[in-house]
Image (cartoon, rainbow, N blue to C red):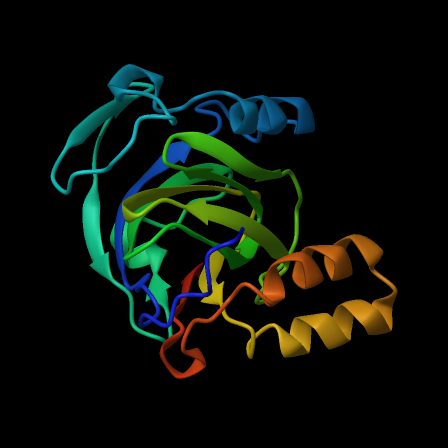
Length: 219
């Protein structure tokens, strides 16, 4: 029997640790194959790997000869400029880690937008991968997160092509799912509809407190 929906306050996604930029190529503009290979490869292999659970501010990582540091960022609702945090760059990768704490095991939907390609790990397990070149919009991808009681570790990998470099992430409650549900129905997107309907009833987060953070670079 499924546990009843939690009535606890929405966990926050305001605090992130950011690492980057990691260049896709050191020798000019990379081709499509080189960009995809960089997306598929574990850029954190030298310092624990992408499946390593947990990120500590101040920890340094050697990536392709670059000495990088995980830097804390307090995300305001109107977003955080990654250009100021890690340096704006075309054909580059950044990682973002956050923690989600819940009083009981539950499943939530992560509304995720990205510019451009994005991967997601939860507690060391990859739960989403989308190779794409696109502009940022809220909730472009919906990702089911099976949270365990207590602390959960979320890791994002965002790979930029050219110009703007961004992601937006928020936990969706039943109220915030109303608009994505309507848009999916209007577009005839059956897969998206099934995802929303499968998880919408189980979400009982406080819509007023649902976190929404966006990260963007203007080049």
